[in-house]
Image 1 (cartoon, helix red, strand yellow):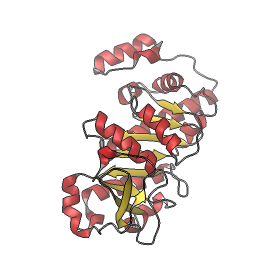
Image 2 (spheres, helix red, strand yellow):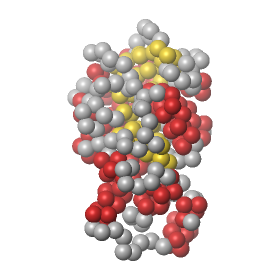
Image 3 (spheres, helix red, strand yellow):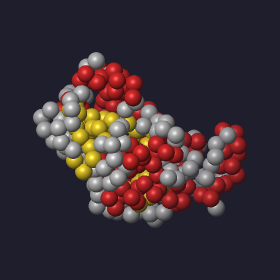
Length: 272
């Protein structure tokens, strides 16, 4: 099968195109990765090349040994993925120790996988373990309203979560565990990978101060929907502040009633 026609590639392309149209990916901003299922690899294996050179990941992910990932390329534009996925994405294979990766498809005009690959893979390993293998998507983008809030709100998980929960009734249903926040950090290295991984053990959304958002999902729809929900909540909050601030809001009891009716495990620590 032509990899470009594979269902997983079509899902990958749709997310990148939808997200670019949302305005979340200026120039070459943002990145996406998908842990490919074994049956999906089997269907396209004749299209894959042998690994020519192994590269250090920059972190150790032994639980991902032998896995294949579809990832965006470093310096590549999200808006171009739909036009030429073979030039703007890559399929990489992780070696038997989980220390190196090799390119087996894509980046036909040259290049390397996203510079955030260490962060993606470290968090894939965490989420694979926590979800018994269900989580397959890690996604990073630069949604403007979310970034704006990191300049005006204290960089604390509880404060961000509570404010965004209050912006729309169904938000606590979408991210009941809350949202994690990191201080500003240099992107692309082990430090931000470790800080994000620590938060990803508790949350599915991490906001990088003055930079963007980092989310996970079992599939493309879940990851995109999570990003979209948080960014919409941030846009409502920006409007509320611009109009002079809240005059009324959802009460603590309202959140508890919501959790009971929707049978969600709401992080009640953030209600205090």
